[in-house]
Amino acid sequence: MGINCPSCGGKMVFDIAEQQLKCEFCNSRLTIQKYKSNNEGETQQMTYDTVVYTCRNCGAELTAPDEQAVAYCSYCGSEQMLSAKHEQALRPKNIIPFKKTKEQAMEQYAKALKGKFYVPKEFKDPNFLEGFRGIYLPYFSYNTLVADRQVQFEGTASYTKGGYDYTETYRVDTHLGGHSSDVNFDASSAFDDTLANEIAPFNAKDMREFHEGYLAGLYADKATTDERTYLQQATELAVDSVYKEINRKAGKAKIKEEKDPEMRKAQVGISAVDCEVSYFPVWFLTWRHKKRVAYSVMNGQTGKIAVDIPVNKTTFFLISLAAAVLVFAALCFLPMFILPKTISGIAAIILVISSILLRREIKKIYVRESHIYDYGDTQHKAKKKITKAKESSAYIASNAPVKKKSLGLIGVIIPAFYVVIYIAFAALKGVSLLETIFSGGGSAVYFLAMLVQLPFTVFTIIHAVQIEKKSAIIPAILAPAALAFGIFAHSLNSPYDFWYYGAALACLAAMIINCLSCINYFNYLTTRPVPNFFRREGANNAK
Image (cartoon, rainbow, N blue to C red; front, side, top):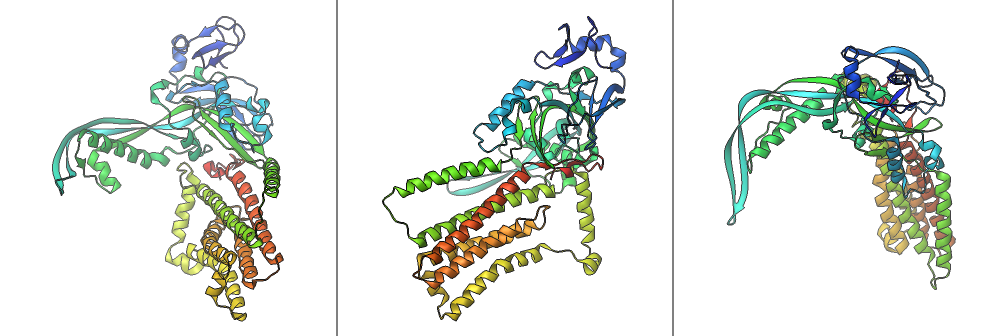
């Protein structure tokens, strides 16, 4: 197994900096081309010998051409020793060798963390950074054949001259033919498409014919996604590239494009799409906390990096407390007096801002868990088809699911309840609504804050009930409740300051709960559940 040094028989690894095999014992060098010429029969086979490492915790499988010490799993962060067995693996067609070394990956990672004060302490631990592992991830490389033929298009050009608008019509004759390539999608269901897109693209100029020598000292994942998953998307990208090239050559004329996908495909003459499996290089670093993992991945060819950076809550609140103490000390020395109503109004504004931030985090989580941009999540696609089928008239009549309109109604009723209570209270005191609003600056601020808060409360609740972690419903209700109390306190127009301080404290308490929820949801967003490859659920693990 593995590649042995022709000089001493020791183990050879692929040296990324030198782009050749290097012996770990005698430092002998051997180019991949020379190794291939000496082992021509071996390179012509459809399979190659490899060692498959299986994680007992999540079931992930990584392959390597030789026996290597594997102390942890790159996907779930488990520190159990992986079990190993020898197998025959299917040989991919092509490979882009690693161009960036482990040291460069560590440098890029350090740059990504620069200026980040709230990261977990492990993220800056040199021993943790040593955990970067080079993994070749499988990608589907789609090649699209364009029929060789003469095609005629209608083109238009519009311009303004002398105060008049002109539109000219052209006939664009062009010859089409050839193929469109370099359309790639990750073929590992464990590697979330959104994460893959962050480190894309890979440059096909470095593509080489596959040889296991490039894997020496590195690892590879298996293709676990059906190639048909991306077929339509790859075809559409190829069609768009053909249209773009025709428009470029047509000069000022803009050609008329078909709208229907099938008509577009027929117009440009897409006749066939084939697919090959290629290996692309990715540096992988995993951080695990309880049942969540954070990934840091870097494009092993270009150095483009994507980092999941959760917040350390202890560090965050210590820094925030220190900042609050400094601000309080500074205000104590200023020759000014802030009225309780002003303090209360400022608290209301801060509360609304925190609600907006919470709404943003909930929306991001909703988008991720819906897998809207994760085309490789085949299980999620199946679920969407099932959901669509269940929305037939027969199903709705017998077992109607909760609709978005119903959720929106619930979201409006809850905060509106507080406004109704306030209006009723004002009516009982014989004070008109407009008089109460404009009787004092604080009351007007609270009423306007409530108007701004209501839509964010509605949409937060709508999305919160559709995600796995639904705790955002609580702060979404507490925020308008605090504002309702503030409206009530200001409507009293009491000479006692404790009402206004009470309203301010209620808003600040709701704001702190919003901030805690924001941090929890941010950490939830920047980490992912531990994958379970035993169920083979693919990218659905990347919620």
